[in-house]
Image 1 (cartoon, rainbow, N blue to C red):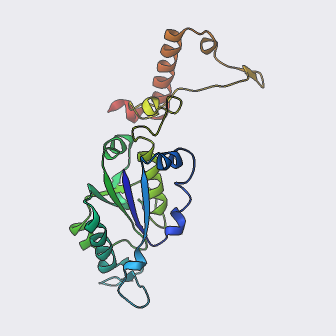
Image 2: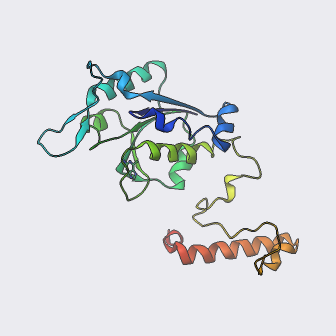
Image 3: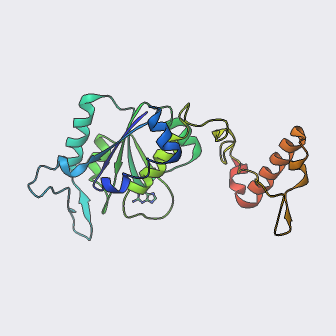
Length: 225
Ligand code: 6GU
């Protein structure tokens, strides 16, 4: 998978993909992340990318031309399966969406800033709009980083048995059961007996029950779906 991220703050995204699982994904050639500085596609001398909004009101709007120039430039080299705009008024990100998008080959992610982007860019180019939650960030970059992490770890070959995505929270619309490691007793708290039993069937049953219990308590909305 190749992800091209269009941003006015490439520095903000230089580190997040160079550690742990995503680093391995890149080293294995399974994931390529490119940062594109939107300012380089501005046609003005001052490298302007935003302007006052028509109709008045506080807050700048990201202009059409630099974004259009940038996307057209990228499209010369390859076709994109998806051009995603990260925005608080987009569709709420969830695991199902990540599973689907992890099957794409080439993706552009456009990070919004200020009051957002000119509506015509959304009409002309954007194929999907994603929000990471009901709160407002100062820009789409950190949301884009979350997207790349969530999708990158699902690419075939990225995770091994130890880190398998099969049993993730949300993968079956359920939260994960509690987990324990050594020591057996910590500050008088014991690891549940069944996990020490070596009885695989009982352990799996216990984990399943705990997952249901935890989901009922914390996220009953997941069970209703
Ligand atoms: Cl994708 N962008 C911004 N700026 N704020 C957000 C968001 C995205 N998702 C939730 N809040």
